[in-house]
Length: 168
Ligand code: FE
Ligand code: ZN
Ligand code: FE
Image 1 (cartoon, rainbow, N blue to C red):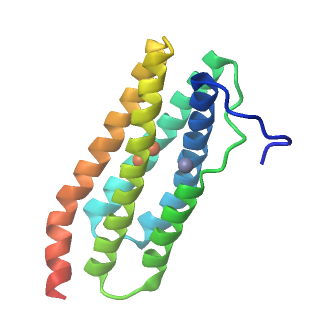
Image 2: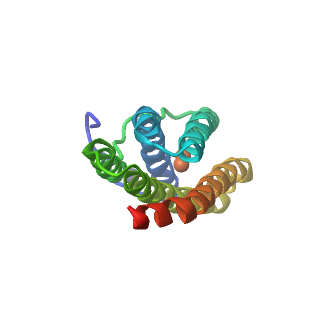
C-alpha cells in the first residue's frame, strides 16, 4: 500500500501502475510454483512448471530493465487477482485424491494464471507502443509470447491428463 494515493492522470501513470501489478504477480508466481511442482504427478507437467519457473525469473528481470529505463521503482502494487488465482491452485494441489484428476486441476489453475498474465502483458505492450517506447513494447511482447507458449504446452499435457482423469 502506498503512503498516499495519487490520482491517475494519464496513460504513462497507468502504464507504470500496471507494470508494478505484473511485477508483483510474477513475484507471487515465483513463490507459488515450487509447491505446484511438488504436488504435480505427471513428469511432463512437473517439467513444464519447472521450465516456466525458470522463464518467470527472466520475465522479472525484463520488468526490472523496463523500470530502470523508466527511472521508476517496481514495487508498490499488490496483484489481488493473482493472489486469488494462486489460492485456487493451492487448494487443488493440497486437496489430495486421484493423481491424474489433481494434475488436471493443477493444469486448469495454471492456465488461468497464464491467461490472466497474457491479458496484462498484451495491455502494457500496447501502452508501450502508444507511449513511443518500442524497446519496452518488444520486451513485453517477448514475455507475452512466453506466456502463450506455456499455455499451449499445458493444453498439450492436458490432452493426456484429462483422459486419464476421466478413467479414474
Ligand atoms: Fe509470467
Ligand atoms: Zn493484477
Ligand atoms: Fe506465466
